[in-house]
Length: 338
Image 1 (cartoon, rainbow, N blue to C red):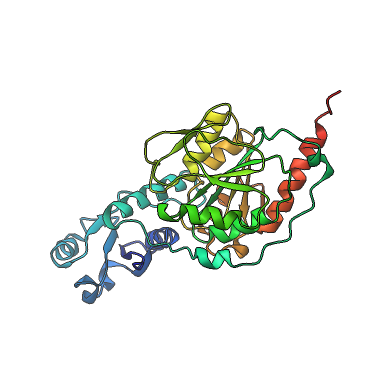
Image 2: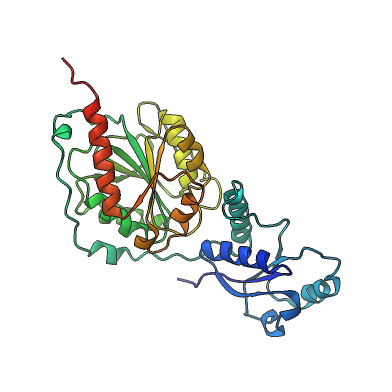
């Protein structure tokens, strides 16, 4: 697989250059050089040095001669930024970062992200948690409680560990948005379901949310949901630069099914989930994230954490334990039918 896109950053403001470089790296691209105009070395303008220049100059009138030279000499295409990068904690930062990623994808394509599913498939199964007695009396598998799982680079290993740790009879239906090539979906299904008590399948038109099952969102088209939990194929690609889109899937579950009880964001590059998660959290959805120290890459859960909406962070095993206990308390609080 090809190496990640090689990007150079030119900014006359050091802070702006740092923010741009950090955002580009967080999306999985390689920032080869980050410099101010006066320090730019001619060797970076030649053939095969870079795939793209990202340029941000606060005073273009001051740098007109430099810009003329850059336009004449640079072999790689130039992407000019149209505004100051906000602080990472600013409410509108996720949307700014998403627009930047969309432009990068338009110019040089998506960054290469290689998942080694064969390695994940050979890992030992985690010890499942014991099933609380409150779950064993529940017979109906029709979905009344739905959680969305979102993952990107490093996600399959984390999600597998999470699923392997869950007990039988868990009254939760899961939907997974995993950034992955479409050709690996069936392999992902097999890997995730090998040791798990959760049945895994790729979601297709007519599939249905059920307790004890995980539906893996398709890559090539977005899916919606009906009130009865049935999957509805839209025939349209996922919105934005991510496929499947965690943000869009969160919204589609909440809108179509009527409620999204919770979401867990696992290891990954980028900031998918950081736009929809705060909105759903404000309406009562529980938003959790994998702890940074346990991630292969923590950009994605970190981006959601920085919005301030994450109520719990932990390792995959801790997330599984927390979910089981929360659901146990919810089930125990419902009076038994007479």
